[in-house]
Length: 117
Length: 113
Image (cartoon, rainbow over all chains, first blue to last red; front, side):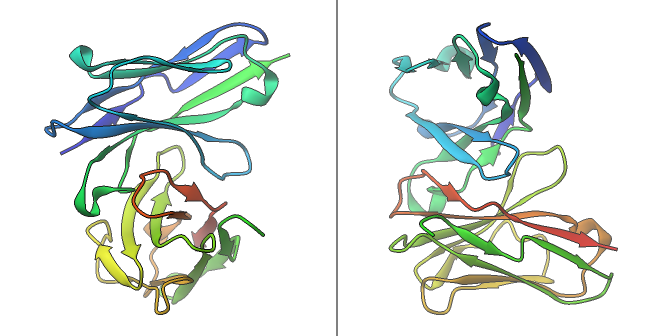
């Protein structure tokens, strides 16, 4: 069975601070996808990134960066110089690769990020 | 619009009633998914369609839940004999082929009194 744990229920920061959202996962699969989604107050989940399990290179996209460490089963997400618009619930998710597994995601419980001006 | 559209956005019903929730995916997306999100939780997978057929319905909680996608586009999630525990936000998502990148709608909030 797959499991995703986001131990931080809520994080509160002041604008321009850096913030890291933790994600730890469990799976028996040797290949899998990891994701991060953002859920703003409107409720619509927005895709941020997909990472393949055999690509451990870290990724940076603007103020966002992701640190994937297979040895510790972690896929952490850092926002640099946070902004008020970053306030949302962030979900880490996991899926198998192949067959009918695409899009069948196991989500963590989410981390509520509040960025104060 | 260009995104995934879900109706109704809010539905309040009484215990025991029948409910239908509709999802209109992004045009051309062959894969369609239903998820359920309870308060303070992450979304949970319910069912996945590839075209008209349900490719994986392993997440449906029991036989009161059923979903169809008769023409490979719009999908309807049907819940019979609703129970208070069915109260949640029901999210629909679509995807172009099998990429794993899902485009979600804003959800249908179901409240069972």
